[in-house]
Image 1 (cartoon, one colour):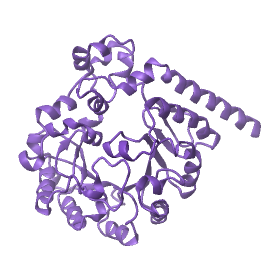
Image 2 (cartoon, rainbow, N blue to C red):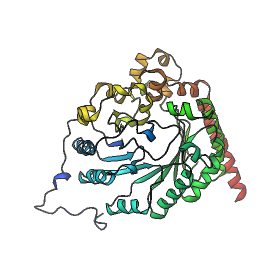
Image 3 (cartoon, helix red, strand yellow):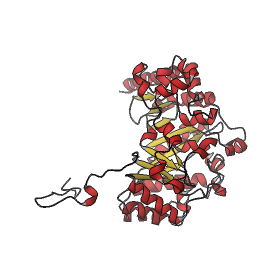
Length: 406
């Protein structure tokens, strides 16, 4: 590390710099903040959480955004993931990035549709010694333009991915599955793999108000989505395990590996899990909406109850992190859910499921301690075992084919 210039000896009589000393923060710690810096966008996506083309949630003013960055530093935040809307439409984008860096925080990820991504933007990141991971949406061969509401969106996304690969920027892709594009997943994967995309996250389209108006009959319920994902599992191994793939809510598959994780199986199956957090992810990260509302995660944006969460420009991030409604999610345990939800408490799968996702439960029932109907279906209809059996059968077939070819 000395040879690489990462560290240097601290000799006799030399003290640490101020920002190297331990520091106490009198607030609940969050490692990273996922921030929608604007609600505006250059696309017209059929499912947008925030009706981005119309900028329904607006954005913080420049002064408010700068103040918020300073507050993140005062709360000990280490990194910021930036999204929108489309983040590159914000005119003061680089001023915000520079302010983040001035506090020794880093920009870890950028979520973009790829239309505005070019060499000049990547040059600006490199000038700042930044190479954030670029996350680009791509909703299937032949369907991306339809989903994003802009002609040429598919071409733009693929161009942006090739640019990231050429320039050495880490990247990943997120794909929304619906009835129209569900059978294009294998072809889409091949195209992305040929470009060099290392990771793909696949998810069902969130049931937003916009999607209910614009899906044109292409929405998938949980059962249909899960069936589509199970159908894909054998293709992953047949195609040589080309990249890391998360089929959200179903299974995680890994590049070049026969290991996998059945996502609904969250807990050990014994009472030892009672003190486990309902959601571990929100313990170390939070989400800020374009209007400045502090939420545990982005899917909470779709819940009517989001208005109960605090606005950081009203009470500040430090105080917001201790807000009682916010903490009801962040610090809730499996035992808290079972004490308040008699249906979950009586379920035979309670020590394996752990109640599922609180954002889904809140959206479906209006109750933080309600049932996540998606998880109920997966467990009670035997999908967890089907996922495992499908993966194991596909792996066995892959191994047999490898032995024959050798």
